[in-house]
Amino acid sequence: MSVSSPGAALRDIFQRPETVVMPFGSLPLHAQMAQHAGFEAFELSGGMSAWWAEGASDTGWLTLTEVVAHAKRVARSVDIPVYCDADTGFGAPINVQRTVAEFIDAGVAGIHIEDQREPKKSGGTTGIELVSDAEAIGRLNAAVEARDREDADFVIVARTDGFGAAGGSVDEAIRRAQLYRAETGVDAIFFEGFHTWEQADLALKETPGPSYVMAYNLIGNRSLAELTAAGQAIDAVPFVLPGVHEVWRLLLDIKEAGDGTPLGAYIQHMNEAKGTAYDLGWGSQLGRPSADYVRETEEKYLPAESRRDYVNTPNA
Image (cartoon, rainbow, N blue to C red):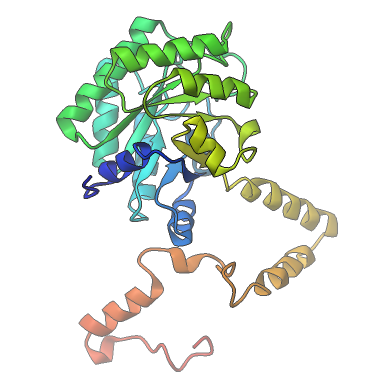
């Protein structure tokens, strides 16, 4: 299969027989880390993006324009495909079609659209309600039509919250997934929630075609071989959680100390990684354009008298 576009590269991942690990985060830096570490794709979390980039809760507060603008920054920061959370599609069928077109224009490889009633709730929380079967099917088929018109490689994934919604169950999640597979042209199914791997196994077994389960309490409990055998298409891993918990721990330590000594100790610990694979410094070398590229460009295009002195400086 050709992987000449972001969508084609992501589609190839979903269609493989083995599970593919996909780092899951919220910022351009996170996507750059994923690429630098050698991963093939990156998933952009809607909830974490709301918290980290906008200071908002994952409750449907952000508009399509805000979400796509952030996704565009992430997608253009890396060369690997970026897979994004598109919530409910942001409105009626015509709005869903605009959502697809906007994400494609932003350079994103694919999105997942959920069957929640608007405004959506964060997965795994209370108060989730679903739209009717007919409305969910219409929402997804509107997205598929826009995909086929704008970029046939773009990946559309149907997410069902049939387990976590009020009155929900494993059976309802499976029923919804099977319905979306039969009545729409989506490329994969995403089961949100589940509390046990027995529930996940049943859902994956009963749903033909690419599908996967995302539930924080299940992450890391199975090997890649076991996930592949179960039929899990991707294993989305939210590796950025230490960026909340460990940063908060350090901040409390600074508050307790009353000065910057805890940070000094952390920087010393960080410097111990120099010369190893764990050495990223402050992360600036992952940025685009890089400082080295800027210097090379200046030397290539500026006259000698206009170039900066990079040599005779204490930081050389």
